[in-house]
Structures are given as structure tokens and as C-alpha cells.
Amino acid sequence: MKTVKFNEEEIELLVALYEDELKEAGSYIDKLQQTLNKLKKQAESAKAEPTRTGKKRGRKPKKQLREPKPATGGKKRGRKPRVQEAPKPEVVKVVVKKATKKKKVRKPRKQVVSKPKVQELPKIEKPLTEEVKPL
Image 1: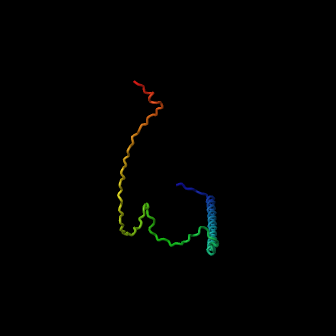
Image 2: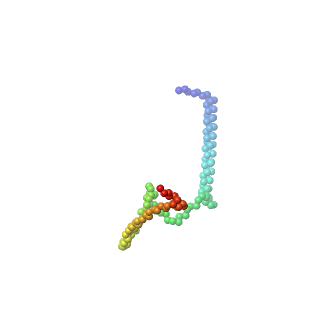
Image 3: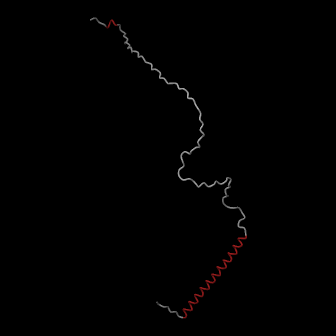
């Protein structure tokens, strides 16, 4: 290891430098203590005075008109059933007589008689005698 040798002058300068740093650190500590004392005094005076004397800011709390519902274990998981079961109505037995039904009968088919078509003869303007020649 190497050693560093100082002169008496250098040692005096270093001692003076460290003494100055100690004085500055001591004065800094004193200033911090003074500010802490001031803050303590302000905190004590703030506790004695009321904090707010005006209107409150923010939303008004909701009025509770209904009684709170008891906890049922939270929401059920999964899909809801498609059809909710309705309460079954009371069964009442009623005797009903069946009405007699009329039998459905087919109507007989009518036979359609077709009339023979008659051909009309063409009208001849000339007398028949003239057209016919003897053989």
C-alpha cells in the first residue's frame, strides 16, 4: 500500500476545510429544527380551529328509503333458465259430457251426360238443282 504524506500547511488547510463543513452542517440542522418547531405550532393551532364552515363539496349521499335486502349469497353463475317454473294451479275435476258428432257423408257425384255435338251444315245460296247434273 502506498502512503500519502502531507505537509503541516496542507494538514492545516484540510482541518480548516472540515471545520467549515461542520459549521455549515450545524447551521443547517438548526434551521431544520426551527422549521419543525414552526410546523408543530401551526398543526396545534389548526386543530383548535374548525376546518370548514361552508357548504360541503361533492355529491349528496343517497337517501335510503327502503330497508336493505339481506345477503343471499350473491349472484348465481351461469345462464338463466329459459322458462321459469310457474306455480302449479290446484287441480279441479269437472265432468263434461261429449256431444254426439254427426257423421260426415259424401255427397254422391252427379253424372254429367254429354250432349252429342251437332255439326251445322253450311248454308248454300244457290239452289241445289243447278249444281247437280244428270249422269
